[in-house]
Length: 254
Image (cartoon, rainbow, N blue to C red; front, side, top):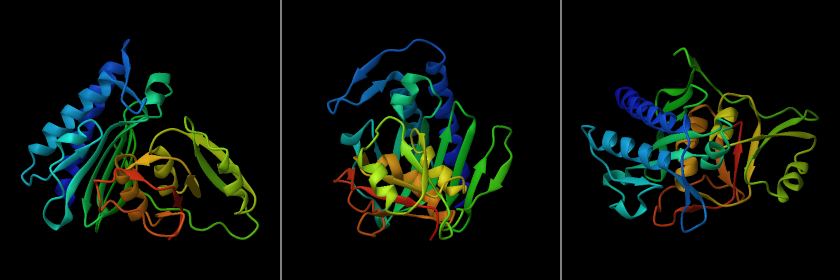
């Protein structure tokens, strides 16, 4: 698993370079059928990742946000790659640096490997079964990360919310926990901040897709946290024909 994780990290880094080549200049923005934005950086990163994953010694089906139709179905042992080549396209367009590359390996409905890179920030988060979770700084230094644990009674919960998808129900939900503060953040970085203990909870009460969450889910999982539906069930990737996630909560404790 260690060798595979390093290979996937290298592929994500190649996608980083493709994205930053576009980020540094003017670029066109088009709208997809669901009115979400698409840039040439999304397409370039997808091609880099697809080629990289197909070149691995073990080839598996790939479900990418930018090629849903090309997905051939779940492979042996319920395995497939789940990819968001550029999560946070709105943040990319705003040039606020809060966008990520996301690659996850799914097995029997759960993420067992995840790589999240933040090209403009120069950091990465990686995790795999049996290895734990790590943050990689811009200088290449690696740090084991773990969630903060459940806040003690009476303490202030450190919450996270989407920067581009604000929900009026978010504050009401957080109030059920007690005193809280909230920090807006883009892309899958929110889950990664919880994985490294810098926040306690991230409720997502609006629509997301499987590829938005899977890689960071692996990081949270192996850092000791969990991502659950509002009914308390683990967020599942077992049925990729249904690409939309239910509302969920990222918890910084097990």
